[in-house]
Image (cartoon, rainbow, N blue to C red; front, side, top):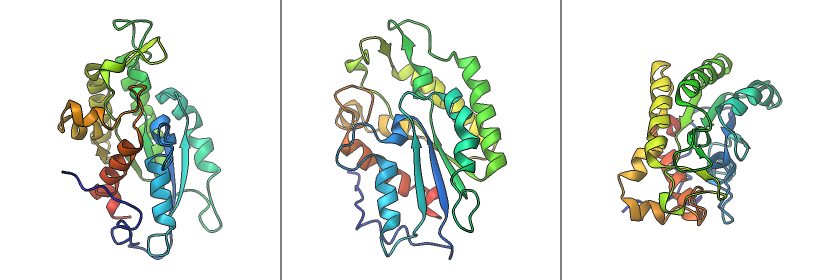
Length: 230
């Protein structure tokens, strides 16, 4: 049984390791935005609140998630978003957290329709996004959550499935590995828990996590070695 973290229980694990609080941007799609979580606003918002508590790191975390974004859209706004999130002595952010790709994997029109972004184009685009992001500052990547296939199609016209999700997350994971960018494989971690466990954490729309799902995702993120150092 996985232990879920609350803001109070996370205070010790998020104590700062440096004197100056960091400026961090989380950039991506609806998983970053937190759609489906009326209780906590998503994992980014939950983490932002934890870091605002008096006994924690005090980092400033900007949620820059946009529903429906694919890698191409995130790449288009990456540098503008980055350049406009400096504060005081920190003229630009210290860290970028990326989370995007599930919308690229979607099949349009029917279950065997074309992918929104074909896999070859996706590999090129995700590589370009990571290269550009690394030129700006250190980067972390939080992978996608699995969908509930039984609830498809989404919006009566878009189909997501685990096989495509696996292909796109593997392409992302490989691109991150080649650049020594830490990648948190949420898809595999959740799938290992079983189908019923996943279904309990996905909203009725079959795509977005619910409040329990985002609470679980927060726990996965803060227990990740790559982010625990902050």
